[in-house]
Every structure is written in structure tokens, then in C-alpha cells.
Image 1 (cartoon, rainbow, N blue to C red):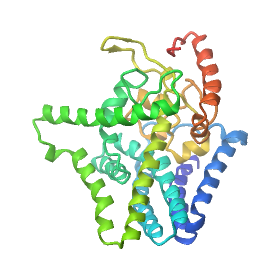
Image 2 (image 1 turned 120 degrees about the horizontal axis):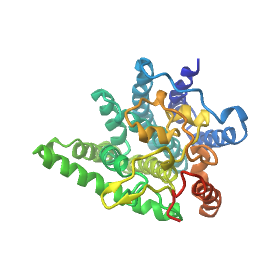
Image 3 (image 1 turned 180 degrees about the vertical axis):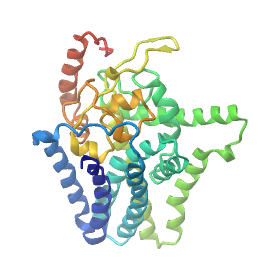
Image 4 (image 1 turned 90 degrees about the vertical axis):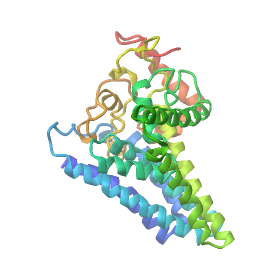
Amino acid sequence: MSDFRFLIILALPINAIAGVLLMPHLSGPLTLAVWGSIVLLELFWPGGKSSPAAVATGTSMGYFSWILRLYVLLQLALIGLGAYAAVHSDWLTMLGVTFAVGYVTGAQGITLAHELGHSKSKIDRLGGWVLMTSVCYGHFMVEHYRGHHPRAATYDDPASARYGESLYRFLPRTLWGSLASGWRLEGLRLQQMKSTWLRSPLLWSTVVSLMLIVLPAQYLVAGAAIKYVAFFVGQSCLAFLLLEIVNYIEHYGLQRKADGSKREAFGMMHAWNADHVVTNSLLANLQRHSDHHMHAWKPYPTLEPLPGPQLPTGYAGCLLLAMLPPLWFALMHKRIAALQNTPSGGLANA
């Protein structure tokens, strides 16, 4: 029965669709209420601090894969219906709708695009590109797999936060660094394949993202067109900011040993983990992050809760903690100091 917990993945976009259609003026506050409820469950529900055991390797993944594929359709519907609600609302309601949609496309959409992108199925990888294109962040589909995974928990990785680096110093570095790295890596791939940019999925993803901003606005009157552009750009920005805050959390202060171009193999001590059942169910076990980096092709239901570095709470709560650097540092530096005093220590560049 624990396998059915992943159906909750579909509940968040369905709830958001209902909100923007039936109560657009309340969609923003309702989204905040959902986020707050998840945080409170992670903090105060004793039974919610651990997730069920991993699905056995060799189990058919068809059911689990179809949950992610259905999500792709729900996100496209959510963005379309959110756009409709936004252009027919006053500005305050439009902002609430933008927040409601961006919370889902960022917290879930990018996470599931990440999982689809790790699939060996071309259809699933296409689904990942669709999701990232819908939030104007297609370069993630290059940088994450060919940049972040080889370089995670090193100073070479723009998506790994350094010890003592606040979220607000990290964000400009990772936003620009990931963008530049993604395009550079794609250029190298095309050069090695002796191909042209016209055959680059990154180029076409970028073109489609721009078309999604510009073309619908051409058919709207001035006021509605401005609201549409503000909505689409706004939900995209919120989505990729949520992604980068999660990136900040996942490897904060952890450092692999490096000697020139040679790096220590990625181990379970190089990523922060949490096993809270609500967030793990919503985010396809992303919080079992050490196992994911050590075995990048493992399907999400088979990821194990390794005894690596543990976050003070799940991602939903850590998103808020990371926004308050003094509190974040106070909680995390104690954990890093404790890790350095273990046989597997020496993890942070303090």
C-alpha cells in the first residue's frame, strides 16, 4: 500500500487547478496554507519523519513512471488555466494566481522534470524538456546531468553552496553560473557530435519558451497582455528560484576532496538528506539525495534512505530556514561540526 503514497504527486496540481478555476482570489492564500501545513506536519507529526522502505530493485516501474507522465499533462493544464484566470482578474488576484501556479511548477514540476530527465526512456526525457520549457529554464536539462552531477559538492559547481555562503550570495552565482555552464556544455556536445545548433534541444527549448511569452500576448488587448506576460514570467521565475533554493540546501557546506582535475568519488556524506514522508511522496524521494547522486539512474521509488548528513527538517521547512541566514547557519554549522568529528569527517571548507 505504501506505493500508492506517490499518487499524492498528482494531488498538488489538481488542487491548484481547482483553486485558480473556482477561487482565483483565494488561490495565493490557499497555496501558502498548503505549504504551511506541510511544514507543520514535518515538524510535529512523529510518524511522518520517515518514509516507507524503498521499492525492490527489479520491480516494474510502469505505474511509477505513469504518475510522472500524467503530471506533465496536469502542469500544462495548470499553466493554461492559470493564464486564463490571471488575464481575467484584477492585479492582486493575478499575483495570487501566479504564486499558486509557480509554487507547483517549481516545487514539483522542476523536481519531476529532473526525475524524467534521468530516465532511460526518450519519451520521459522529452517530458522533462516540456516541463522545463514551460518555466523558461531549459538549460537545466543540460547543466544538471552533465555539469552538476559530475561536479556536485565541489567549488567547480555553481549549484553547490559553500560553507558560510548565504542564500542571497548563492542565488546570483548559481543563476548565472548554471546558465553559462549549460550553454557551454551544449556547445561542446554539438562540437563533439559535429552537429549544428539547429539540432540542439536547448536552442529549441529556449525559442519555445520565448514564444510562450510573446505569442499569446499578441492576441490580447493591452491590459490583458501585460497581465499574461507578468503571469507567465512570474510563475517561471518563482519556479526556478524554488529550484535554486533547493539546490542551496542539498549540498550546503559539504565538500569533496579534489586534487586538480581529480575528484573524490561522490559518497553518501556529500549531500544532505531528509526522509519525511509527506515531502518525499510529493517530490519523488528527492530528499534521499545521497543515494540519488551515487546511483543517478535509479528510479525514484528504489532510492534508499542512507545515513548521510541529515537536515533539521524536510525541504518544505528548510526552504524557509534558508531564507533566514543567521538561523540557517546556526542550525547547519552545528551539524557540519558534528560531521567533522566523525570518522567520515572533513566535509566542509570551514
